[in-house]
Length: 258
Image (cartoon, rainbow, N blue to C red; front, top):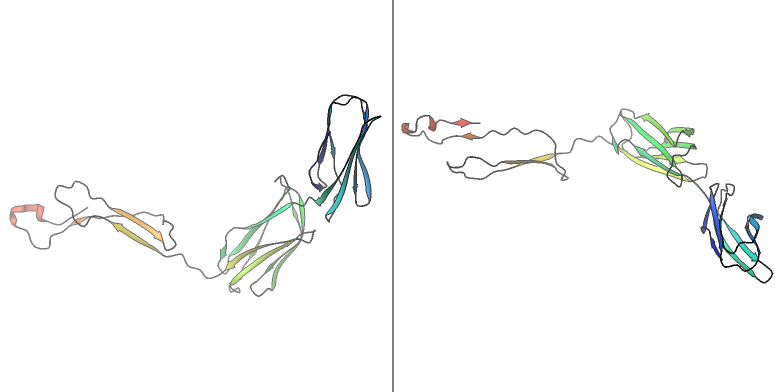
């Protein structure tokens, strides 16, 4: 016989126990019992008359706020056959996955901080959940904002708060307190920041001849941290003479800019 069941069972979530019996030569009684938290739950108890059997039994255990160990007992008994197996399983609450995100990592004084809270189940589907408490801590760990009993409809809620014109600068924390006592934190910074500096690099040959029909020029703008700078470039190429040329060159001796 073969028993298929996950070692980790999530409470308040659909699970499945699968059993396979092969090459039976007599009728047998098949039973499977799950013992947990002082209770005995019968998952199947049936008489099998077929030579081969494969069946799956869906079941679900009530939600629990703590992890525990369960015992699964599978028994196959006939007139001449007796198989019995007893295995330990881990029961764990099927908590949702909660994520938090701000619209940017750094804010300037007076700006509005936008953030969202997302809840997903173990299969990454949105799940409705209630967040008991959410609050904001400034760099001195003062609680400056607070939200209670926030409902996540279709697994999502969006919140915001304005910064004062002269806030304490530094690292702020948004803390989400869930009903299971687990906490989720997300940090962002408030500072008077300026746009990053950049440099422009121009590459071109030091000398060209009168036979060259084209002048290769490359212009590259890079921020100090290496990222490219998007923008438009205007290039002007001039031909100028250091001394007055001979009159035999005519207009070709004049300065030209293109």
